[in-house]
Image: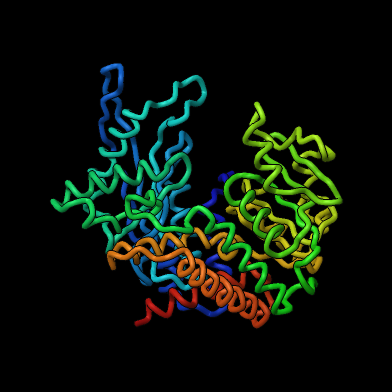
Length: 425
């Protein structure tokens, strides 16, 4: 029996949406198959003097709306099928929030942090590998072609190496080609607001859904919020809704466990505790009840924000979810089977392709700033982000209502119609 892959799931959703909206078969076929798949092998000299050959991928799904956009991940489990799925989802995400970009994704099979008895790579090895990969894919990337970004185990330093190596390839100064990647450091062409963008985008999506009457919640003030995953997106989201919207954050967790206090938790204090604790975890915070990650998801609350791993809400626990609204800050935290259960229960799902699209939106702004040789203020970036997220939240929810489908399906309908509109021109 063939194993169902993430790419199979992505194609299944596209096929279902195409059938629902009567999409022309030729457009459906284009969306089901990436426009280009690049697989490269390249040698890298290691610190011990040996030479190791690495394999890397770059999948360019669709550029009907603009250059391909998407991260590069360094991970031992990277494979072409996973990258295909991620590139496809990026096309959908960019179109959902109406960005002038298409979907791409890349990765290298490697052990940057050490895994399964293999030592972590040194900074020198990572740099040489990054530069070799950049040279291998350089003809296929560029500010007007394909714009990579950080992803799993990649960061602004790695983006800087890509800019530098790409500049050598095209024979231009680095400052002339900053738009080849996003996620750069602020002093190297990055954008203000990028670190908070995913969380802030999720906050704007939630606000719009509540304020426009799409949920059972009348206001966010005093609403009980549970956040599973206290990394960058989860911790910032918890702080923003607590401090700016008056929400009561009652549950927080990370990979080592969760905490619960019905009287509320202060996200700033929790983050300070996590950063100073020997185990770097919230799990032993003294003024709260300890709960498992599974128990945390099932706490009685108004807003649940899964912000960590994929497939944490499944058909095994969806019927125990009590939240009135689910804000997907993580990628793929809810399975298709669970989607159906939540929809039938009347729980409003704000899906990942909308709720966590603040990150790629501000990445788009970084690219636009680089092309225009500008540096925008925090006020301008946040104002544009709010407008983008609020406008497209209403469009997603209205589309779902029009077609009598759940909001994830509605987001795909909106996105695919937008891509199809460009393909027909």
